[in-house]
Image 1: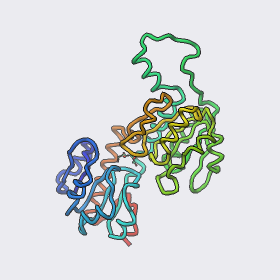
Image 2: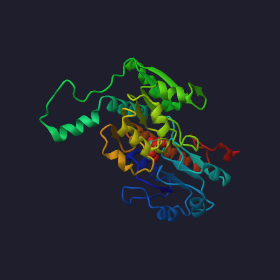
Image 3: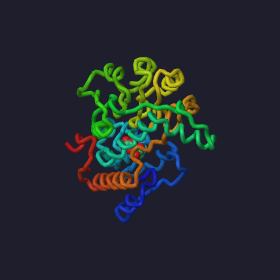
Length: 310
Ligand code: 8YV
């Protein structure tokens, strides 16, 4: 099997003695495409990260013996699932185990935005001692405000649940219901995005949407970068069309839109949604379990394309 990035110890140990492992240990960024194409060749299973695109070209390069692509993520927009299904290749993901960690990170960003935490941290690193004043760095309170959740699956619901403790009203919009999207963007004081990336959700948040949000509103994205038009977001933040934004994911990951970088009202973190000791162990073990089941001809516990088995 090819493992495209070193996982945490628990997961790497779970692979030991189970199969022959080709582990990419190159520079910390994603495996270069030509190397991925070369090293996928002849493998029975691939354990991939979001940064590896699995498409027809890659499947051709891998060869007909490939049985499973086990993604180390709940999302699988990096994988052409229809193409895998057509070739009888199983696709598996790691749902549930990262729900709570990702909902926590959404809240970390919400709080950072409304109370200007990252801005305050940056300020103190250059301005100590500072001149305190009653008008200094004012944020917004959450109590009594409205939280709008876009995408109401596992992570969206876990994020909504935490709002009770902050005394917030919650509304949501998803494929299967809730309030209309236009109502959500107009009424929400905080919007947290949890929808998958599909052709329909690309640039769901664009220049027009920002003008229809409250000028005091905050947008947080822990889902997928391309749901937000980053250049338009930077313009809206600069123009004061919205108060602040918190981003864990980016449109052209691992690049960050340059015009965002010198804005104080945006908090940026490098795709840390599932980055806890507990969750990364659970995700790694889940991905390994899926991979080993797939190469052994058993049904993986989290199978994205069960049609392959029928
Ligand atoms: C992954 C993620 O940890 O699960 C997902 O869909 O975006 C993250 O939790 C990360 O991208 C590693 O593949």
